[in-house]
Structures are given as structure tokens and as C-alpha cells.
Length: 363
Image (tube, rainbow, N blue to C red):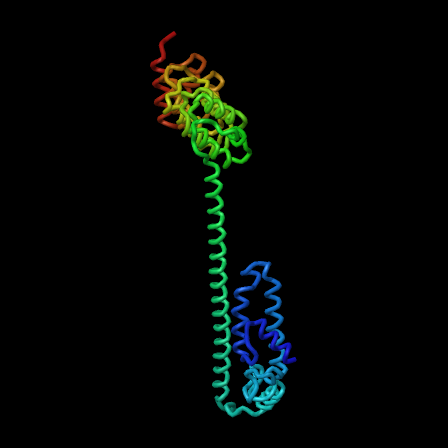
């Protein structure tokens, strides 16, 4: 038994004769280091050995045999599981004998029982408080440990990303990388964005426009890819502009509005670039489109204008009427304009429609 306990003490990093308090302290320290929840599953075997050694010593203390091998329970020291000196069972017998003694504080007909009741309540409240305090400290410890683990993981991920970005930026020599086209057509938007950075540095701008046009023609571009393309090229790059605008009806509101403004402020005058956005069902997109429609290019197609004038949204009708006033009305729309001028609920719509009806030349 002595040899076994010595091995258990060695497992906990203690020398023979260590006290029970030393054992508990060593176990808590090692558990914080090797517990699988903290150190990872690879340390589960080591933690199992530590736990087995601790439980073995604890059982020896409970049996009252640990003190016989030079521990703190020898030489008259009390076991943590006894009421005083002697073995665990002797201590339990003494406690039972004390529990059978009549209480001196309780008197029949007196108020001595109040003191006992108050003491019991105080002890219970103290126990509850101590338990909650232990739980709070354990929760704080776990939160700090989790924050440390997450921080280390984020640092590792950041270092790996920096390495990827460094490898993705070869020394610029003004020519295309042999793998540029492969990376441009990758299914991963992050890879495509990195390849577009190399595309930006190409001296052969015709090649850059051709590759970008091919990329954008393959399908509706990702939001980040589209944003980067709008920053790299102007609407004057016709191949790129056509590839971007062909998906006008498929873009979300934010992307569609960004492309329309890119066309407007880039000086685009080709109505074919604006045409795909006419199929949008979003009034905000349509208002932006009609306000950006190039001057002197006439109105959108009859089918599109007819649909716009059927909307009841005052902002969309206002944008359509302003465009009609600028480019001139067509005969087929006059009945609708007269109804808008006389009965629409929005004063702004009535004013614009009336202005068009009054200024239309008599036939």
C-alpha cells in the first residue's frame, strides 16, 4: 500500500509524507492544466492518471490508512473526514454520540429555540452564498480561458491569412501570371478578388478588359467582385460595361443602384446599357434608373414606359413624368397622363402630369 501511495503522490508531483492539503492543492493545479476542456482531448490520458491518483489517496484518507504512511493524519493529526484524532470511523462514532446529547439551548415553553433556528438559517444562507460564489468564480475562470483560446485561434488564423496574401502577390513585371485566368474563374469569390488585384496591374489593358469581360459574363457576379470591377473600370470600357449591365434585372437593390450610378457618373450614353434594369420590380431601382436615363436618347421602350405609368408609387411616377417632360410625351400615353393630372392622390404627380398635358402641341 505504501508503495502504491508513493506512486500516486509522485503522479501528483509530491514527495512521500505530503499532507492532505498538499494533495488537494496539487490536484487542483494539475486539473487546471491537463483537463481536456482546457488542454484539449490529447491530454485526456494524463488527466485520467492524475484523477486516479487523487481518488486513490482520497480513499486512503477516508479509510484512515493514509496517516500510517507518514501523511498529515499521522502523529495525532486529524483526518479531513473525521471529527478529531483517530480513524474515520472513530470520528463518526464521536459525532453520533454528540448528536444524541440533549440541546441546552431549547427549553419547553421558552424562546431558546429561536436562537437555534436563527443559527440554522444563517448557516444555510452562508452555504448558499459560498456555493454561488464558487459558481461565479468558476464561470469567470471558464470565460477567461475561452477568451484566451479564441484569441490564440484568431492570431493563428490571421498569420495564415497573411501568408496566403503574401503568396498571392507575386512581384509585378507587367505581364500576366500563367495561373491568372484559372484563379479569375475560381468558384471562390475570395480567390477571384485576389486575382483581380493582379489583373489591375497588367500593362496590356486590352487583355485586362477581355479577361474581366469573360469573368463577368459567366454569371451574376458576387457582390465583392462587382464592387471591385466598378472601381477598376469605367463605363467607357464597353466590353466590361456590357458584361456588368447584362445582369441588371438579377441584381439586388444595392448592386443595381451602384451600377446605375456608375453608368451615370461615368458619362454612359448607350441606352442598351440601361435597358436591362427596366425589368426590375424594385421601385427604388426604377426611380434611380429613370433619373439617370441619358439625355437625348429618347424614352425607354413603350412596354417599359406603359408599365412604369401603371404604378401608383408617387416617387416612381414622379421620375417617369420628369423623364417624359424632358424627352417629350408620346401620343399613346396622353389618356393616362390626363387621368394622373386630374385624380391622382399626390399633388406632385398632378403638377407634373398637368405640365405635360398643357405643353403638348395641339394635333
